[in-house]
Amino acid sequence: MAKLSLAEVETIAELAKLPLTEAEKATFQEQLSAILAYAEMLQQVDTTNIPPTASALPLNNVMRADEVSLSLSNEEALFNAPAAEDGYFKVQAVLD
Image (cartoon, helix red, strand yellow):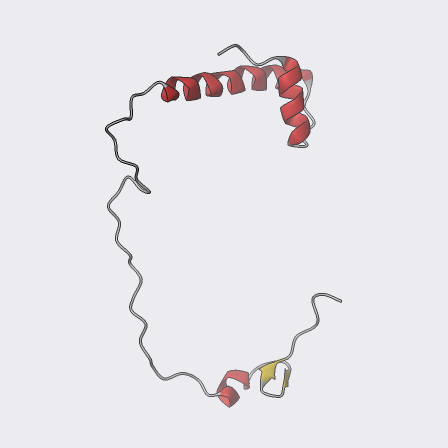
């Protein structure tokens, strides 16, 4: 892959809303070109016999089972609430 041009780096910076100095543009030109070259190298790796996976590690679901248990009554839950109305927490409106 060819090296990114300064115009391409400026376009990327504009899309990301990043104000860059000329020195930063030159630095990012080198770094982004190296990243793209590495990605191009990875594209050439033969993965035909490798099955698709969601994770490289064999993870199992670690969530606990849902179980019914005792909980607070409505009065207990609202006991220390700064404001309550009709059995609910009362909060200030977020949207008008």
